[in-house]
Length: 356
Image 1: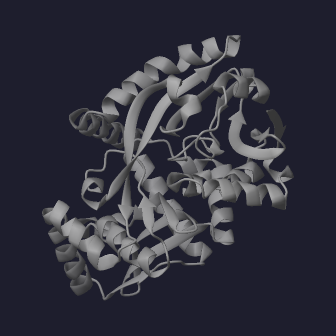
Image 2: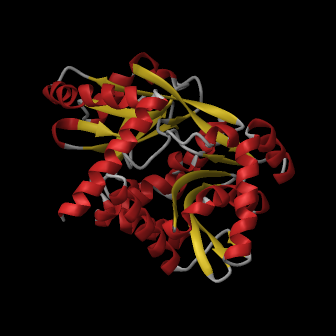
C-alpha cells in the first residue's frame, strides 16, 4: 500500500473521477461534505488543506482529505463547518489509522462528525451520535404524510403560520436556486445577526468563510433557496448539493417575521423544492433543533474522537481540547442543559450589546 500527499489543486481529472466512483460505493459517502468539490473549495482559501491518496495494487483505494495545523494537529477539511467527515473508500479497506497519520505528518486527527461505520477509525470513537436525514425519494406527498404522522403538531403549526404569513404579508413564493449574490449577502447578514444575538461566534467575521460561500454559490455546488412573501424575502437557506444528496448548511431568516416561523416554513418548502429538482435526501446535521425529529426519515451514525500517535503535539492537543469536548458533549446530549446553555449565551449577548 502506497500513500502520497498532495494539495487538492494537484488532483487531476482521473483522480476526481475515481473519487466520485468511490463515493458511489456506499450511500452516505455521497454526502456533499465528502465530495471533491468541498475539499477543492476549502483548499482554494486555506493553505493547510491536503489529500492523502491511498493506492493499493496500483489502484487508488481511498482519498483522505484533512487540514494540518502547527505541531501536526490535524482536523477534517472545513472543521467547524462540516456535518460529515471521513475517508472516501469502499467498505473493507484494511488501513491502520496511525499509519495513515504518520504518512500525513500528523500527530493527531480530531473528528466530531465522522461516519461511524468506517472501520479504520472505530477503535478511536469516544462518543456516538446520529445525524437526522430527510428522505424524499418517494415524493412530497409521502414526505408530508410522514411529517403529519410523526410530528402532527409541528406540521399543523407550519401550515397555519404559512397561511397567515401569506395573508398578512403577501403571497408566498419559493425560489429553489437563486443566483443573485445579493440574496447570499442577505443570508450572511441575517446569520451574523443571529450569531451575535445568541452569543455565538460570527463565522462570517472570517473573510475566508465568506469567500468560500461565494465560491460555492457561484459554482452551483451551493444551492441558495429563498422564501418570499409578496416582494419581501423572509427566509433563506444555503445547502450543498452533490448529485441526489443535499447537506443542510446555513439557514437564516428575517427576525421581523419571527412570529410566523419562516425558517420552519422554509424547511418544508425546501423539501418540496428538492423533490422537484432531483434531490432524494437532505442531511440535516446533528444539533439541538427538536423539529428535526419530525422531519427525519432515517439517521446516519456519527462519532467523535481522536486518533493520536506518540508525539508532543498529540499531548498538547489533548490537554487543550479534552475538557471542553466533554463539557460540550454533555450539553448536546441533554436537552435541558442545551436549552439552559442557549439561554445563558443569549443573556451574555444582550449584556454585551448594552456595554458596546
